[in-house]
Length: 82
Image 1: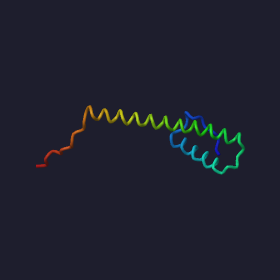
Image 2: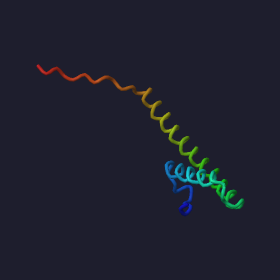
Image 3: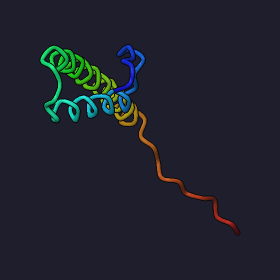
């Protein structure tokens, strides 16, 4: 597995990829208990980080949608070309 990057520097996609790698490594079952616990701890941190990123994105979408309700877009009607 690659060197651990600080969580605050990881994008959602990077965190998810690292989490998938950890799960795959742990599913093999051939790692010492101490390493498994360290991997589990990192996995929990990555899952929380990912959830936070998703929550932030959801909040942004809600804000954008609420702004649209305040000032709805109208249909485009081109000028007649007479």
